[in-house]
Length: 246
Image 1 (tube, rainbow, N blue to C red):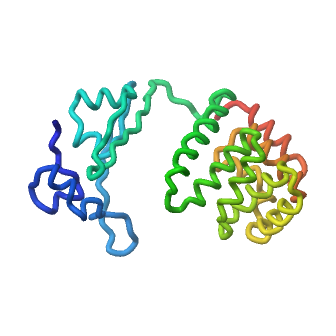
Image 2 (tube, one colour; image 1 turned 90 degrees about the horizontal axis):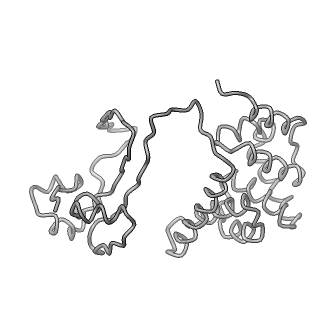
Image 3 (spheres, rainbow, N blue to C red; image 1 turned 135 degrees about the vertical axis):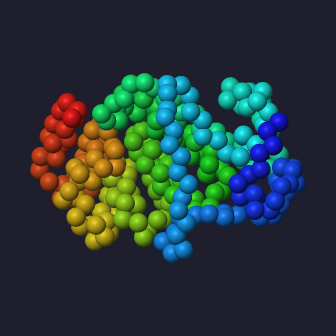
C-alpha cells in the first residue's frame, strides 16, 4: 500500500495517512495562484509517449494498492471510506499522431453531448453547490441533442442572470421550445449586455470550439429569436469547415 503523505498535510510533519485522513484541515490549500503575495508555481515538464496518461486524486495513488488501482481502472467498483480523500482518476490516451486542429466526427460529437448529459444528471442529483451552472450546461446539452422541452426546463433552473451567455442560450432554447415571449426577452437582455457578440458571431463561436454543425444550429436559433445575425454567416461557417487545416 502506498504511504505517500498528501502535499497539503506535509507541513504537519510525518504522520500516517490514516491519521491525516481524519485531520480537519486536510483539504486546506497551502499554495495557490494569486496576484498579491505571489508564490511561483512548481512546473514539471514531461515528455509524453504513446500510451495511457493518468491524472489522479490523492485517494487513488495514496490509498489504493497497485492491484486495487488496476481494478479501479478496469471499472470495478471501489467503496471509498467517507473520511478519506476522494478516489478519482482521469485516463487519457496519448497518441503518436498530432493534428493541426481538434476534430470531431458527427458520431463522436453526439456521443459527447449524450455522455455530458448523463454525467450532469448524476451531478445534479447530488444537489451540488453552484447548481445553476450544472443546470445551464445540462440545458445546452439538451438543446444540442434536440430535446427542447428538457432544455427549457433546465434553463429555467439555471438562473444565471448576471452572465450574458446565459441569456443567449436561454433565447435559442425558448425559441425552439415554442416560447417566443421568453425568447424575445432573453434576446433583448443579451443584446443589452453583449451588443458586440452577434456582430462578431463567427469569431465568438469559433473561439469557443463549437463544431461547424453546432455553429449553424446556434446561428439558425439566433435568427429565429430575431437577433441581427449578419448576412452570410452560414456560408462563412460552411467555407471555414471545408477549408484544409493550416
